[in-house]
Length: 510
Image 1: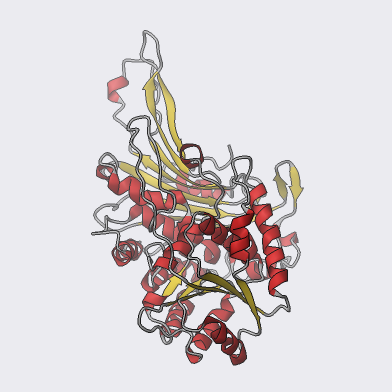
Image 2: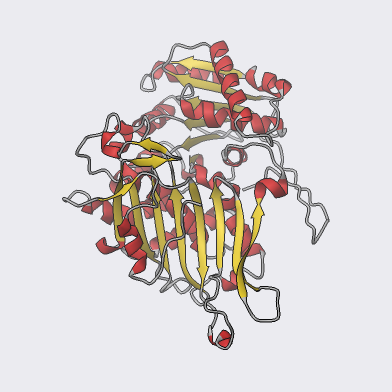
């Protein structure tokens, strides 16, 4: 997890620390399904940013493997247009598009047209790669993961020799339940070594997610408080305003539980709750994350809420309900929202509930972790006008903004004791003044240099699925959904989930 951006200044300590990372090794970056949306929106901008930062070797090249009959020149033109849109859409703070950087990067782009199932495609690819280092990025539907890796093995493209590496980056969804995740892991490991597999979760490319470890383990005033003696509960929210959009076919068979909880949500929980690793070696970090997930109690039916959005409004614009979306079954029981209460059975967290929620068509786009500390004794203020104390909350903002907020009480100026709630906020974009990024830059760079810290290991994936497997089994039986209006905070049943513990969710909308 090597930092790409490395200079900062502080009003407290104005020394400047430089940590310029090394340039990635020479090699080929092969994108299966590279003509698709993921490559245009995220991968090409991320690679451009790495090139602009001087982190790509001059012998670095890109090969797109796709079924579409498109030339390398057409791809370059299409990628350039997407890159211009990426830069201009990030606001006035965005850096300009440097044509010299793009010219160098685009000149390295080649393409291979062919089916992912046919051996001829891999023979052509092998001729272009030769004996170079290679990263294979599977930007394809999950049904092709096993097929492509099998073909990489048969063709010899997955074989490493000497100092030449071959690595495979796999997007989610990694399986559709515990059994399929185990089966996919077993299939991949017949061809690849675990050290060659990089299961990517783009949430872990967010600076705030990476900074969870830095905040906890590098600051002496955080980690001593990070336990059941001081923390009342934790809330993890991953809310979206968008609906199913053009993904009805995928989402109808997936739903919010499969789409978000075993991967994104479990990773946020693991980073928040894990014990300190013995080092920042990839396996040391992933060992601790897996231990936390394995320590989660079996989730009970009454601790889960499944919801589906009905008609409502987003930003004062009317939107239809999920069942009226194009391609959705008008009687669909697919959940677009899920809230869960999770308990971790270890010495640090016993008795501390972790409430998680994720959903579509909610009041705002927001991903955050809210650590609620226990209230201070009220008796000290019994003879003052103070009628309540401001809750002490640490908010880790992940998107759309990245930063940290601390909420606490302070005395309002005046002759009498009146307390007011105040907030101290740290915002990455204001403090470090960085240009636009996709969140993939760190992940791609780490794969290039062989650092797997931010990628999931097989046991980590399976532990996440074990948490949600009981919920998936209940969903096979007739089960009611709690409906919520689009643009709202979610279903009332989710509020009741916390209310029975005398707690409440933080608002999603501002």
